Amino acid sequence: MKQFISVNDVPDINALVKKALAYKANPFVDKTLGAGKRIGLLFLNPSLRTRLSTQIAASNLGMEAIVFNVDKEGWALEFEEGAIMSGNTVEHIKDAAPILGNYFDVLAIRTFPSLKNKEDDYSEMFVNQFIKYAGVPVVSLESATLHPLQSLTDIITIQESAKLKSQGSKLKIVLSWAPHIKPLPQCVANSFAQWVNAWGEADFVITHPEDYELDEQFTKGATIIKNQDEALKDADYVYVKNWSTYTDYGKIYENDPEWMLTNEKLALTNSAKVMHCLPVRRNVELSDEILDGPNSIITQEAGNRVWAAQAVLATLLTSLKGGTK
Ligand code: CP
Image 1 (cartoon, rainbow, N blue to C red):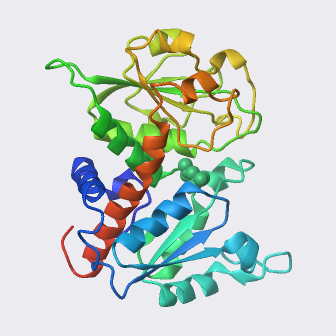
Image 2 (spheres, protein in one colour):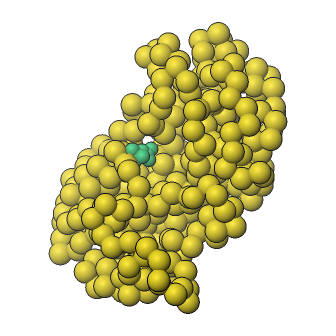
Image 3 (cartoon, rainbow, N blue to C red):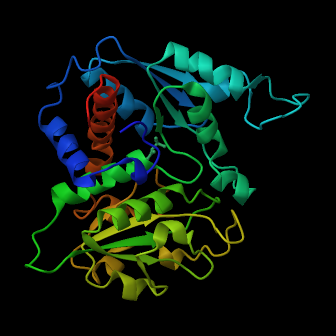
């Protein structure tokens, strides 16, 4: 593995999950793998889990992690090729990225979409410009369209908590849209869909109101059911997430509170485990009764962010050392 931007960088999802669970069982087994190596964690947006779990993961591998809040502490970066920089941007990524590649062995970057220009966001210009100019492996800490460390974590959490199914029957996983007061990116939903489809070991249903279709490049393979109650029937896992509209980009059309998951809706499922990437708006996206109830595995899920990051960093470090993984 030379970079970690999407599921397409992962040759074997189950092998990576197995590695993450081995680190969960024995966090310090590779405590010298990252000795003498340094990772730069570049944040253009806020974070709690991604920032801390990736630092802990690096530390468990003996790797130095330096956090740089680019949005608050750095020069305003320009990403457009050929830009005439007479506006607010101060430093071009062409100049900054090679220097960062000189300082660090691995670069990890978080950027959010603008939600204003779909073509720009879906071209993943920020991450791609870093990859082009940094000259070192790049890890996405969430990009304009995807959140692969979150999705790897989600597959890990599903695998470790999976109920035994009778032979021949698959787990049923439902991605359910939830209300929110602000237009949010599609990243987590896109990425979850991309990973569950690539994993291929579940019956996968996506439910959302009219006009909240996601980009088909990520959802292809899933069954789309717009009636939430119907979609939830017999689910083993319900992944709750808000996203703004994709087609008429970045809007909130519908904020029906009826889409919030409650115990009454959960009763339609196969006593489903409930997941969410966090942060969550209580009693808007998810009810207290679900978040504080026995079916929520959300804290376990957030805890697993460490092991997902550790498995990814260890794999990149092994590649840097000339290994084959
Ligand atoms: N789930 C997630 O990425 O959380 P943070 O935004 O806090 O990093």
